Image 1 (tube, one colour):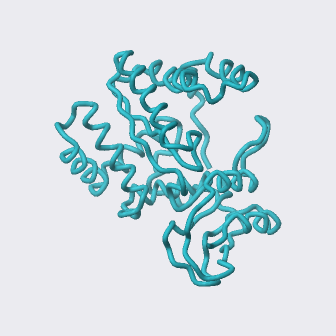
Image 2 (cartoon, one colour):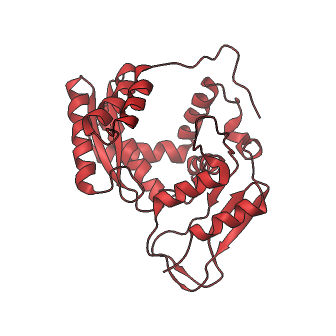
Length: 273
């Protein structure tokens, strides 16, 4: 595919955070709100930001599964960051189903590129991205209110400027200069792509979102141990949204796997109620 320039070096913004997290892991303090706040903001503040908008998720696929827990974390992050001189706000978003219609590595990059091309208008991801873009524009002082900010964000997307800026960002980090036009050819593709048919007719009522993420790991798309390799090709696409009526045999999702056996393991993670 491509290789990063030889001059590219990783930047260690908050090197102590990794060690502190390891200590939290063995002292049962992973869910400590003050320590979560410190871990998140250590990198943000070290980067020298002037403004910040945080996405705090809640639901069965989030670390903070209840709204009360999410509000507590959001308030902690906002208070500490503002106290450190960074204009900060937070939005709490739903994680009771996958945010996008896919889950995985390359498939999520493809989804992002399709979004930047304007192909995801009206979806949940479009609503969330525009909300955060508007909030960031207001926090940065570039517009006066959310209504103007939303118009500005939509204009950046529809005009192609958002894609243009993304392309420059990708290239600055070692990516190919033509990625925005060649991404379909450059992204790796799984050798086995198979629809997951609904066993019966009904409606998509809910997701166990965390299990979808674990299923991606089961396909090789994530690590259980630091030394594990990641198969970026694998994951799920075309995930049916909550509320959709499905007829028996129609796909609930499409699994992307390294082989037939792995694809078969991905099938049971989607069913219908």
